[in-house]
Length: 325
Image (cartoon, rainbow, N blue to C red):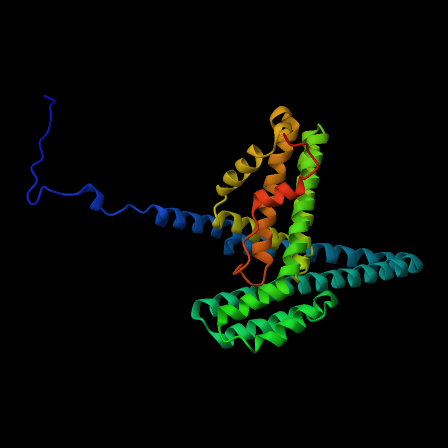
């Protein structure tokens, strides 16, 4: 027989519900986000071992086949064999040069990662010596760039007057990174404008996809170059994984918030034209990826300067492109 169930409770019954502890679901959310970021940013050791061994095996078989072909051709026709040997040697030299460039690009990105870690440690511990070391690394990173020579000179001149770790990094941000931030934001706006224009004008869905992928990859590579990195083929793939991991770690669902604000403020044209509305949405997504790329490639985190807002970047990118109501 079903009926009401009475639970008798001992103790004080005058309990204020407002005094109950707040259930914090941020712990579970952050743990899930961290796991997703780890999955996106770092492949498993088994996958690394598999792809490394597969590439090594394919390279070995291809090299052996090319060597046997050149030796056999040299035995059959010495002149043609000599030409094949020379071409093979040129190919190997070009391959070694390409591998060297990719290695330099990866080391360059690793150098920026090391500066980011050092800056985070200096801020966490308020270590003045570590902050000055970060400043020295920034001068070494950008010392060969003529457009930053005046900014580096001002930073070096004023650094001795600052006696606080966060103030040293804030000075580096104000003097050295501000012009780089402006250039990176201009690249984001250019990419968002390109994606939005192609989406609004070209009626082919495949063209939208190709344009978005190309513009986003080019934008990420340009942002890395602006902040002192080099992105080759492997470097671009590593950088893309870092950007995706950062999007997940910072809450990829937050894309919807910025994007909705941007679309709602997009004016009458985005409400009347479906293609224009899709262009605004794709442009907002591109701007969000650009903001993530800036945060990944920037050697020092945002301290005194505000983090770039997707809505502001999209507004600047689409200013004058679509009529606003």
